[in-house]
Image (spheres, rainbow, N blue to C red):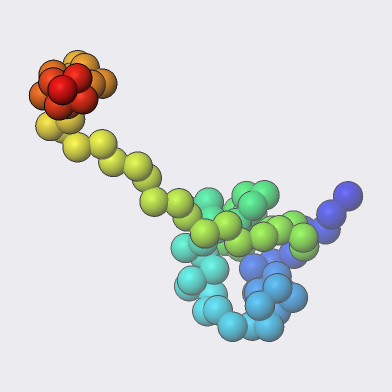
Length: 82
């Protein structure tokens, strides 16, 4: 079983104290720490072996994409059949 430690202690262990408490709280609140941090009262606790997982950018599909277009354009077929 892993031990729950305060964010400040986890920061010292993982990053040598590089990040501010404000940054660590944002990470905890937004779910960037895996396994997720737990809020106990005013404090955030994380597992001592937790990792920071950089957030992934969501894939955005433009609204004007027409999925009903045939995979092969008739003009392309005409050129290939010459």
